[in-house]
Image 1 (cartoon, rainbow, N blue to C red):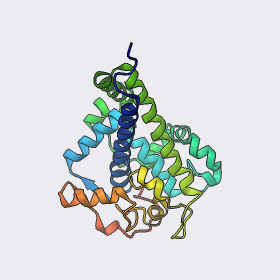
Image 2 (image 1 turned 120 degrees about the horizontal axis):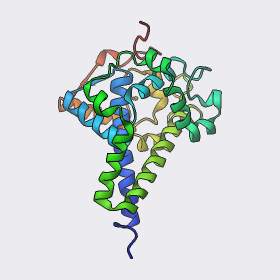
Image 3 (image 1 turned 135 degrees about the vertical axis):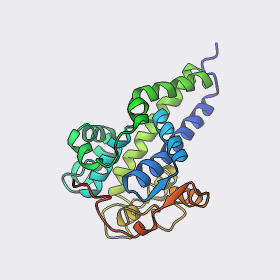
Image 4 (image 1 turned 30 degrees about the horizontal axis):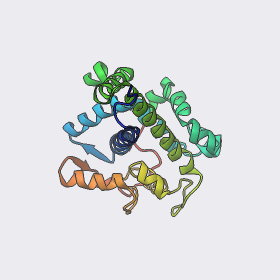
Length: 252
């Protein structure tokens, strides 16, 4: 009896591809477009990214944005939700998902740092129901690859995404190059695996820029340039060299 519907190596490659797709949506949509308002996606592009986010991660965009903005406001200070300097590098690297969820479920965090993201009809009906999105994503994998292969793909995808996110928040504030005077670091290998997020020192120096430095290692920045040429995003050039620690005003 054949256990895997597709060879194991194919399952692993599919899981890696889904993780990279999720990383692209994270860096372009959640991070650069929403959290820092560095650019605006055309409605069709934004809708596609919201669907991908819903099916692959089930993340609430308001929660993600709120936690990330708080991280920038209190970067590596005691109030930082996931600072390796405050909590320990291995605690953040391997326990980042727990720290994220703890902070994301605090109503005051979302109310303070994501007050500009008003839930729309699509969010109320679909995108706020993360488990439903994940369930549909898994069901799609089962249809395409069979139950066992789908299970392997799903588990590897989640473990890899969570681990890479932990590396950005943990190792990305502990080890690597620091060309600018901030505590974040640049790691090229991590940038290659996270759509450019590993160029963390560059990002913290110019947090509202859509580009994480003038480097080919920022793959997300390259995608922004391509999408801009295709008129699918509008880049806010005025914020490229802003050193504001606070991504947008959060005081009411």
